[in-house]
Amino acid sequence: MNTTKILIAGFGGQGILFTGKAIAYTGLKADMEVSWLPSYGPEMRGGTANCSITLSDSQIGSPIVDTPNILIAMNLPSFDKYFNATEKGGYVFYDSSLIATNKKRDDISVYAIPATKMASDNNLTGLANMIILGKVIKESKILSLEQIKASLTQMVPAKKAELLNKNIKAIELGFNY
Image (cartoon, rainbow, N blue to C red; front, side):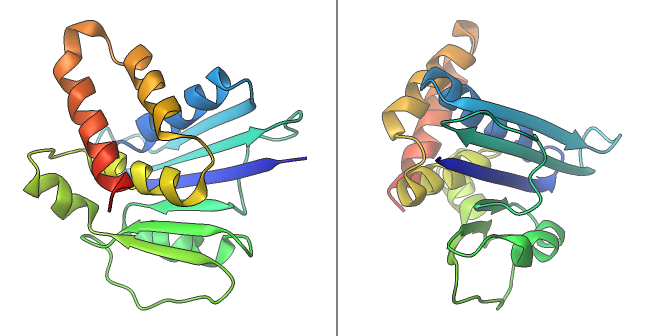
């Protein structure tokens, strides 16, 4: 049985739920069993936002991800809260533009990506989430770059084609980081 449990955490407005939806939709298109569980505070922007995604080749018993195989932390409170919960052999990806830390573990792979700075430097403000997603895809190999691109093409409406191109550029930037 192959199951990957992903937890994406940060503040509202960082694209947490969209990133989770992109992963879940891509998994669905790849004929995987999928669970997507968003969780957010009452604030539109600035409140907490988490998204649990499970991809599996067998039936999923619970949508809740307490111990992720993959953690994507977009802010320091989320990093601090979930870093130690990441399963042995798992991955932690975090935005080092926003998170200064010296936490280490020998039993997981940790990737610091200056995603917010990279987004700003490449006229992709607001797409740090997609930059980190690109790195996640490259390192974890849970899905392919081509699969994510194809899913985004279907997820982003034609009338927002400029957003599709920017999202793909951001993912490629992270993938090649």
